[in-house]
Image 1 (tube, rainbow, N blue to C red):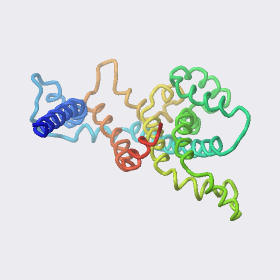
Image 2: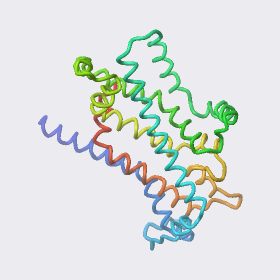
Image 3: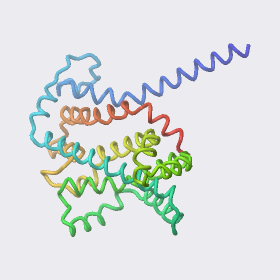
Image 4: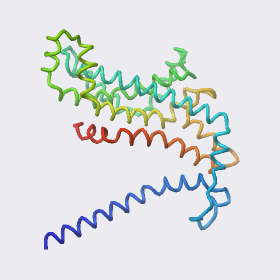
Length: 273
């Protein structure tokens, strides 16, 4: 009797989760479907569930110079900020976990507090500082901002993994003549690969999707994809076909990057405590 009850309960839970997953995926389906519809099909009531797909929206989108430029800018900024943020976070996590110094707890708390601050609160201060430094309207300036904002989270995640590595490995390496840099790069880094994958995914997605700072710190030549996406919201209306086509293309790199590192993501998230 209990086995039958457990089977029915499992089936009910699976059905419920499947329904939730379908509801959650519906906006994504609607976005992709709208990008493949003509304007007449996109606004038809009742909605056209069966239609002849067209790639006209994608063709028009890729022919626009500003979208291609924004795609290049986003790739440069996202990849640069990910490399800088993950590298700095890993080095800081190793130093905080292995070295003893004054104010260690205060620095740890400060890093966590910085993570709590919403990026929108920092827009004006960063704009003022970056203007004084001549970094406004530059890809390097935007990449530095994105990288710096993700360092606290990266340090917090990576520190957990570094703490699991026995200090005896460091001591053995020192006896063999290894410096701290060699220990960090040759021993610690390979052992914290799951953590590096986790923070890389979060940093990549943040930099790829961020809008507010990208809008404030860029101009026509350096705008990123989220900012370029807003250009389809005009005074005459919303260009739904091209905006959904752009949103679909923007979502692809983040999804591919996440799925590629999925096996490390599960290990990394379960190890954080």
